[in-house]
Each structure stands twice: as C-alpha cells, then as structure tokens.
Image 1 (spheres, one colour):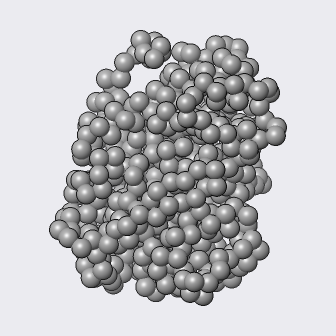
Image 2 (tube, one colour; image 1 turned 90 degrees about the vertical axis):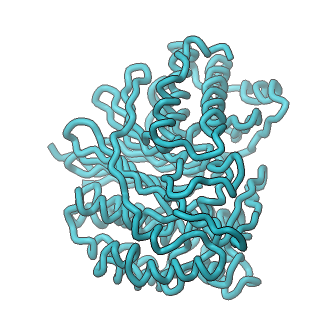
Length: 508
C-alpha cells in the first residue's frame, strides 16, 4: 500500500533535497543521503562531510538496523605542539566552552557512512543524489534567522582561520558576519561532491584527499594520519530496544551514549509519572526532573572512566543498572524520512562545532570531536587511541499500535532531554507530532535546571515554581536552539522543530 511520503529536517533546503529525490522515484535511503549532503551546505555549522553520524533504517520488514559512521580517535597521539585552544559559544542566556584547532580533529565518518548506506539500500545513482546539494552550493543558500543566530553563537570558530571565514561568507576574518537574508555559496563543495560521486569513498580515505588531509594535519598540529583514514569503516549494528508504556522504541546502541540515556529516562517516567497525566502540572514536571536527573547520573557514571568505555563496558553498564523501581527515590542536525512504500530513515549528523580547518579545495570543514568536553570529562589529553568515540546522538524509532514515528535531535547533552520529552508528549499526552515538538522543554545538567518559559505553552506557573526549588535554575523567555532540534516523521505526518528553523513537507 502506498502512503504519502513525509520529510522533516533542519532547513528548507535540506528538506527540498529529500523531496526532489522522492519525487524522482528514490526511496527513503536515497532521500536521506541527498538531504545529508544538502544539510552540509544549508546547515554548515551543524554538520559536514568532515564529521560523523548514525542512521536508523526501517525497511518495513521486521526490526530496524543501524549504521554507525561516527568519528574515531586517531591511532597515535601527537606528543607536542598540537593546535588546540578554547572558544566560547554564546547562546545569549547561557554560554558553553568548546575546543577547536587541528588537534581537535577525529577521523571523519560521514563520507564512508553515506556510501555504505547507498551501497546496501540505495536505488538511484550517487550522481543523482548529490545533485540538490551541488545546486545549493553553487547558487548559495539564503541565511534564515536561525542560521544567522548560529553564526553569532559560534563566531569565534567562523573567524578562526581565513578559510573558515570564507566558508561562512566573510570576505576576511575581520569582515562583518552575514545577516539574515544574505546568500552564502560554497562552489568548492559542489566541485568536491562531483568528484566524490565519480571517485567513490576511496578517494577520500585513501587517495588524493586523504593524503592532503594527513599532510595538513602533520604540518599544522593535528593528530590525524593517513593510517587513520585508510582504516576507517562504517559499522552496521543492532539497535537497542525497550518498551515505554504501550510503545516499543529502538535507538542508537553502544558504543554511543544517546540511546541508553533516552531509555533510562523513559524507564523512570514509566515508574514515576502517573496515568493519566496532565502536561505541565506538578506531578509531570517532578517526574520529568527525576527522570532527567537519573539520566544525568548515568552520564556521570559512564564518564567516570579515564578512558572512553568500550562497547562491552557500555552494554554491561546498561544491563547492570538498578531496577528503576528501586532508585525512583533518589551540537548536530537530524533528518527523518518516510517514503511512499513505508521505508523509513532517521539520520543524525554532527560536526561538533567544527575545528576551524577547511580542507583546501573541498569546502569541507573537519570536526572538533577531540575538543568536545561532553565526550572528554577527564581531560582532552587522555583519549584512548583508535577507538570509536561515544556520542549523545540517538536516531530513534517508536511503534505504538498503528503509529510509527522516526525521530532524532541535535543539541549535544540536550538530545536526551529533548527526545525523552517528545516521546512522553506523544505517548502520555497523545499530542500530534507538531504539538509534541513545539511544547516547551526543560533540561537538567550538573544540578542546573534550564526551563523554556515562552509566553504560551505551559498551562500554569508550575515551571517557575519548580525553578525556585533549584539552587541553579535558568528561565529562558522563549524557545531556543539550546534545547535541541527534534525533527520527526510518521506515515501520516511530518513535523520539524522551529527552534532550529526546521522544515517539514508531505506529498504523494
């Protein structure tokens, strides 16, 4: 049976790329690949071919599968002179420190991932799938309010190198930032994608591009070497699965953190949130805070090791979690696609914030995953070599009776909070996709509570009363990019998060 296709992404240009492929006869995987490539043009501060990601794929025949193409730590650590320095991202109401430079780059996985997806499940030629991204890169993308705001948040990275400044539309490092309505092009990226479609991933990981990246890293303070690129592989994994009330969920398994975090938070809600519940009342918000606090406790427990935990250690830690009934007392972009034949993809991409290094002639900025404090709680200099990095990203699928939803979010540590709340909104409050995503959110981290308090959204003043119970609480007067960007699609609807300028479309 054929259904309308559904697409939700973080930008109208990204969504349009997926739609173009679906209308050309491509399947959900084709559309997701095209959207990922276009996102690198339309959402360059959130994703890049120099970063990493995950894709959860449902072919309508049993349980879904997951492709892990996240970043890998280098095989050797530079002994000295690594280029690595802090910058501060300013969200307005809050700030966050990031580290960038050549020494922040981990082995990128997006190119390998997109080609692995295409090889196993794609139906159209890769040359067709790059078309929308190439057109957008050559014609330029008009900055919307969210993209212009993102440039302001990460202005130190934008200005970090001459190549980075040019990539984001500045004539030089001292020029004014582009504003809403300005058009920014990336013709180098279009030329690079044309070559990539012809040459294949070996060109990037073993050929001319790999050699150029390794040489620049060696010369200018990076850890990456040619052996890191040559050895990189995307990995197919079995998603983790759990029940939340009358819904079954699948998400990102170890070595990622994200799926485990969402699973634990929903398990806690299952115990503590009474049925029926009322959105925004005292019992709902107390249960939500308790669930997010337990997820935060797990994050700290999993990060207590001086090294990144292995897949076996993460799996063991999850299986050994106490029964929630015994403990009840106590950045990134996403793409969701359903095609007309009920095949579906949830794909999450991240470049961290970007390292500032743009690979010459490609229009591709490399990631700063070795500079992500969330992933290096015990010091940036202590990462283990040649290890798949952990991530908070959690592309997720939910089945609840006849309803099936593909969803995911950007937002670093806020991913677990955003997804937990959207899932709860769908299951506990029977909201539509758009309502569940638009509803105000809160986030708890390091004993600090952040609450969105827009003029409309909460039914009463309970959120403000809740904030008074925390020594550290921050009230955000409007919905903000800080609280993630959930983009979701089902068989009958699609909805994108306005916090990140998302765009959703449906069609035959």
